[in-house]
Amino acid sequence: MPRKLTSREYDALVQRLERMADGIAKHKAEPDFPPRLKEDERRTARQQLEELRLTYENFMRQAERAYDAYSEHFTKCEADLSKDSDSLKGFYGKTSPMLADFGTTVQARPVGRAKKAPENNKP
Image 1 (tube, rainbow, N blue to C red):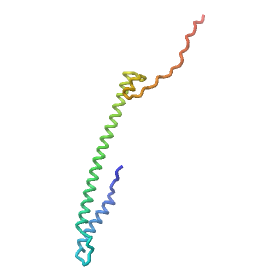
Image 2 (cartoon, rainbow, N blue to C red; image 1 turned 90 degrees about the vertical axis):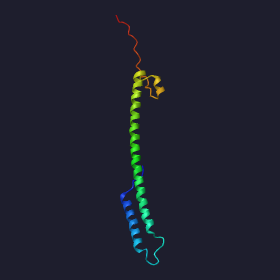
Image 3 (cartoon, rainbow, N blue to C red; image 1 turned 135 degrees about the vertical axis):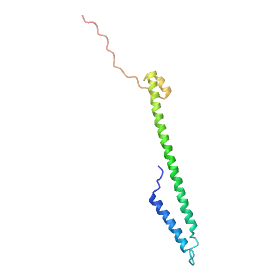
Image 4 (cartoon, one colour; image 1 turned 45 degrees about the vertical axis):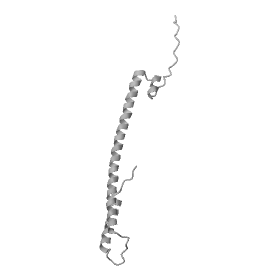
């Protein structure tokens, strides 16, 4: 099953990226400020994170709808085949070997009791 994105993790990371970008903007003019810290990179990272999350969530909704459609059709196919099998059994009989041609299970012929020999008429 696909992983669900938690809002708590996402919200925390978005806030950290935003605070980092704000801090860089506020202090970037200080002497010897680390050159690797770039405000626009953090804001871009936040925007990409938001876009990727939306893309993921859209695909998840599409996947759920596709699964629902698949599941519904699967159930319909099973029901239709069951009706087909019943029709064939009604047409050919439940023990007919012809049923195997349709992939339908043939019921074994019941083993009957031995017939009693007719009793002689007693005078």
